[in-house]
Length: 559
Image (cartoon, rainbow, N blue to C red; front, side, top):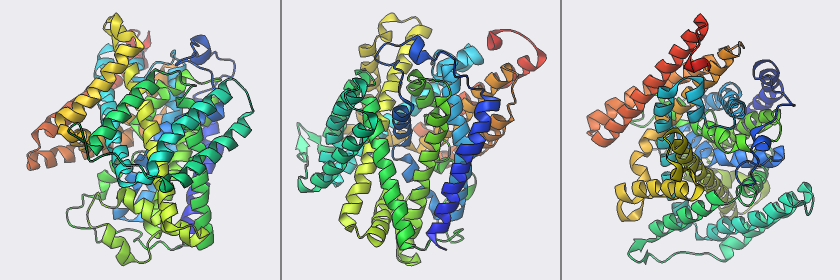
């Protein structure tokens, strides 16, 4: 089958979702009000609360939620065949991710830009809030610790990517000043920023940079991890318009150009999907498609981390409430487009089925390498681009997104500590610097305390990320559903996705518990039980709140 057919069906379906379904949700369900005063204006401080052009904010939101996950998840999931991955990405983007991300922004904006965890206290109850924020903290801890390892490995394995990855920060600092001070128009800023990024990608392989194998007893990977957290701490403290917004905006444009190149190459080369539509001959030890597909592909279909970004940084920068549709739903469409590109690259980027099978020898194989190699082959066939240049382009793209996700993730973790300072009345923890230091310290304790001198401790609990992250998405939909019921609006558009998601995720979690027990992974087993119990408690609290609302009772859930 031609990859063009898959591309047109996928992109066409997601475009229809944005133009029609999201408009219906915006007008009838969330009922966006152009006259509503957003928290960005109400609490404007020039640091975290900054009214932002919707295109710039879309760039920040999109690249913050994207990271490497919409590439890695689909690139692993195609081991079951391209059809299941394709259907989940497209339908998940339209009916799950778009509603979730869009809804989390709306819910937060309507409640003084509180995070979904803190918001739970007002919408559901204090007990649910306390438990929910533990799950949120675990997800952020996993994301930050693991993405530091991912980026460090990319920089070690691809020395030519060091200059463009770090040079992008300098570009963003300049772009931020140009945008914020309105020195030149956004269109010209965009052109200059993208041109500078691609110039760095060209220069990078000419000036490869590698750290010494050991520095003060630390490996190169550990040194990169420390450098990354030092940078992320500074980025977390800077006003969003200085670095976070422009870095994410330019990276978002760079991604879309990369996607245009890749999809354009598909149209020209017309590659064939060599991977099976449904793989009936999966390698031994591969888990069942149901329910694992729905936690293997998170970003690109639906992801709880998106709700944290939506209610953490994005809601604090929304200029007008109607912008939530473009930023949230279209942001999900952008990520779905990236996930679709990953499916095509990993299923049509190899010459034969045997070449594909040589990569997919076990569940978890393929991943980023399959995307980079397959995508580079398609770019070469369609545009004549050198395979090595194409591989560098795709590697830098992945590293830049992982970096922007880590930037936002650490800022979100800082917000968690600051929200805890209010909840538990710890004034000193509410200040930006102490909260940032606590966020960095918690990540480094996991990275080096559990991982030893190489700083890879995040990988220890990473097997729990898929289920924990998807449970977080389901619980976020629960909170949005309770809000809709309180407002007397139809809740089935969030209720149906959350029931399906919670069912699949709880099934995957129970299966994971069984495997951890059989493998004797006692630490992960205990942590998984904590996540399961937390999910059940929050769900019960939400169900209780819905029952009270149905009976017309008042109390904490309706205050």
